[in-house]
Structures are given as structure tokens and as C-alpha cells.
Length: 426
Image (cartoon, rainbow, N blue to C red; front, side, top):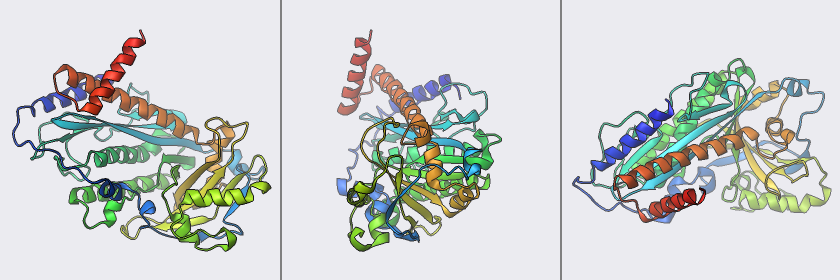
């Protein structure tokens, strides 16, 4: 798909919306309360639904370790894995007739996958598999929208249920990102030819995104079906990478609401996790109590914790470990202590150990060893995905404004500000 095809898909989307202007059956979109929306979208770990227990014990809940493999682990240093990062971005343009969600995903790393995006912004030397829709239309009308849409555009959720005025746009934004990430993970082995046997795919966020909607019988049926499909595809995508000889590691940076450690550790002497205490608060508390023993160049790693999803028996057990990475003169990026959670399957853990590596080593080789505290492939993918989704949103907003489709206040102000900044640049 060339950029001209992307632009054509965007313009056809606007034309489809124009056909709605004189349509019938209009009604105000329903609005979910904030607590309802949070409960549907929040990960199971944040809601206390997931089960957790200690997978591998340790003398301390948080201990100092060397971030890189020892010299004796030649298999880890002498033949460095091929690192890829998967990250996505989604944005919305809202109008009186419909809301439009645009999304993009990027795969950054080594070899032929150095720049592989969907939607692609240029023709790649190595062909990439075709990805899922990257534009979604959510009509603000009583009946769903079922026109003929161009490739790359959809009016249905991942379970095939048509969007209507009752569908949450926040939910659609999440769906778009996860669906594109699932495609990118599945495509990773084919985009790193000859390197599949030592392929490490970093994914921004949880390894398996299991939201509260799947454990809530009162959640809208369409939302529940969409997430069942998305989770099943994520499990299959991870399995494909592992069958190709690689591993997948989720990197979670937002820990302020998850409660995995308090559920798994319980009381652990003076460093016990109080019931309901957030992972972030607990880790900061343990770090503060041991700061006097810190030494430069070390990273602090938690025990390994197993997490099981009782609401979805088909989701494999995942293992999580936490890293507390102090700032150093050799690091770029923001200052202060960085806390992250690494998530992976038992199969990925066995594969890494067969290479002479721990998950921490894989993370450090892609970050600390190159002067960053986050994997550089993830940082590159984040930047590219955001740039593509921003360009798509601007293209749609400008065309909708030109054709007289009224934007809602927030989208209108944002587009007016973007136009002013472009004019001021000349």
C-alpha cells in the first residue's frame, strides 16, 4: 500500500461520512460514566482480578544485579539477539455525523525490519504482509453504518460487530492499537530473515492485554466479544514468534494502579506489600529503604511473579519481574528512578536461558548498553507510530473541514491550532 492509497482511503472515508449528513435516524451518542469506562478498559492487574503468586523466590523482594551478562556468558554477548520494538498510536477526529479513529503501528530494530510500519509511508525493499484496517468510523446515529468502504477502513469492531452510536470511542481507540500490535508481532519473524532463532520482540505495554470488560458480565456484549478476539489473536501472535525460535517481552511503564506485587508477596518481613498497595508505591518504598547500599552501574530486580487470568482460561500463564533503574551519567532521557515491569511466557524464559540470558539481560542489551534506560527499538517505534497517526488525523481533519463536515469543538480547536502553527512556521 503506497501513500497515495492511504490518502485515497482517507478521502473515501470522508465521502462515506458525507453520505450520512442527510441520513435519518440521528440520536445523541450515549455517554458512559467515567467509573464504567475505567472498569471496562482498565487491565485486569489494575482491578485486582488477576491471580498472582511468587514464581521464583529470592532472598529479598528487590536485589541488586549486574544489568549485562557476565563475560563468561559468551553466548549472550558474542552473538547478540536481533531486537525489535513494537509500538502503536491511535487518535480520533470527532464530528457531528461520526467519529473517526486513525491508528498506526511501527516495528523498529535490526535488518529488514528496521522500518516497517502499518500503514506504510513508503515502499519497502522487503515486502511486508498486509495489515488490518487503520481507519475506523463510528457513526452518531441510531442504526449502524454499513456502506462499502475502501481497503484499510472499517465500520466494525474486531469481532465483526458494526459500530453504532452506543459504542465508546475510547474503546475503539484501544481496539485499533491492540489489533495493529497483534499484526506486527505476528509479522516480526518474517521481517527479520535469518535472525528468527535469536529474535527478541519488545512490546510496549502488557504482554496480554486483558481488560476488566472480560470479567464483567454487565459489559456491553460487543466490547466483550471484541476483546475476546483481540486477546486470542495476541496469544496466537506470541505463539508464532516462539515457534519461530524467538521470544516476546512486554514492557510496562505505568505501574501506579497495578496490584500484582501486593497480591503475590503478601507480608514479606519489614518489606511486605500492604494489601491493595500499588506496585509503584511498594517499589519506591523498598528502594528508599535500601538506597544506602546502592552502587553505580547496578540495576535492582524483583522476584519473578506468575500472573494468571481466571476470566480467560485460554490465556497462558505470564511471568512478571520489576526493574528499578537508577539514573546515571551514561543514560539519556528523563532523570529520576525508572520503574518498569517485564512480562513474558514460560516458553520465552526457557528460550532466553538457553541463550545464556535472563530477561533483564535482553532488556539491558537493547537499552542500558546503548546509553538509554528504555529499549531503543521501542523508542523508535513510539516516535514513528505517533508521527504517522498524527499525519493521518491531520489529513482527515483538513479534508472534513474543506468539505463542510462540522467537527466537534475539541477537534475544531485542535485543527485550528495546527493550521496556525503551520502558518507561523513560514
